[in-house]
Image 1: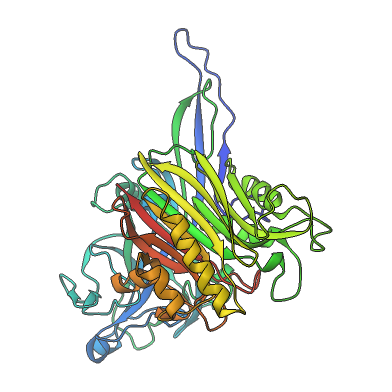
Image 2: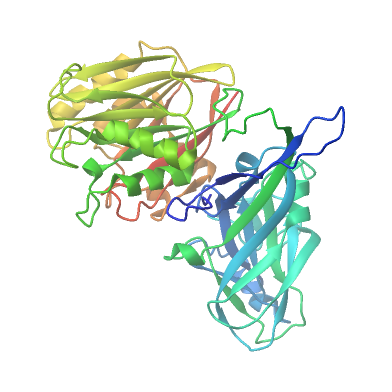
Length: 489
């Protein structure tokens, strides 16, 4: 979700219009509160986008393609349609009054100079880009009618042939009905279909969410508002614990140094803010070190997130040396939450490692959260530390989520220490087909390895995993963050 101005802080903007005072006796002055959000983050806001093709290609999945294609043809094997799904369920309040919703695509290439009419049709099934094709919306699950299970047409636009041009579709009424619950699901799902006469030169190719340049990826900009009393103070997304979803992120920050060798906490904070997490686990967070001239990185990250999100954040930081009162150089694990932390604690592991813990309440349920980082170089140390993390966490009540860099791969003996008692969120998401990563099911977070985990305790009955994805940090760190969402019931 992209912040409106300033441009340097992309993602959601909260713009409160100036009140218009109406001198009517007995009527309170009112102000119209407007919020504009831009949904474009791959895998979280733009959750799924994929091309489907008919005929002899009906069983092919094109989710690895960086393009989205439409084409009308008399030969069914040449027909292409584009499926798109945006998360208006979590980023737009239920029943919000939508004043404007605009889809913008960037044309990558076109087969002919004439314009083509592209229609927007509602899609009735919750498809997954990793498995959707002309016949199935998920693996083994057929569309109600092949080719995307299309329902009614809502709008359309003519698309020319100039590569690099922007194409817009007005989806205002469609998104309004979606977020109001008119279709059941509050995710905005639709297909782009060439509704013109069949033509061998009708192909239109758009950039997908997998395009290497962010500015050409699809985006849905939604403006919504409500009428509020002037006596009310407008606030950003509330820190109320009445919501029923929880989004958590784990990210090894590499001391704040990117793969380009540049120290920049702001770009790391931007990567985090762009995903809109509720809770963040950060590893390799420095205190009074040579990085940043002795900067207190834990305080800086907290401040940057508050600036970028407009929310209050709460934190607990555990130095890896276990000397909690020291002001000397340190590296440690930082836990950040936009929910108040009702209690916190720190735990010193053997061989200069640590864990931080915080408790939050979400939808009336207690959730204990942990951030940790175990040894990489010494396998014996790693085994000891992993057992200590698991045992210490077990002393805290359900529901538990443990996040961090465990420096071990799936299937190893150290992995089993956790996996025997906790669900590996990435592995569970892959089983559900609810995942996204540039490395596919591998879910690599560090080069060609999956070292970073979000574990949910097997007794956490109030938490249900809905999806997980690996975020491209664009070199802000040598790791990519892992994000997972849970329903809290």
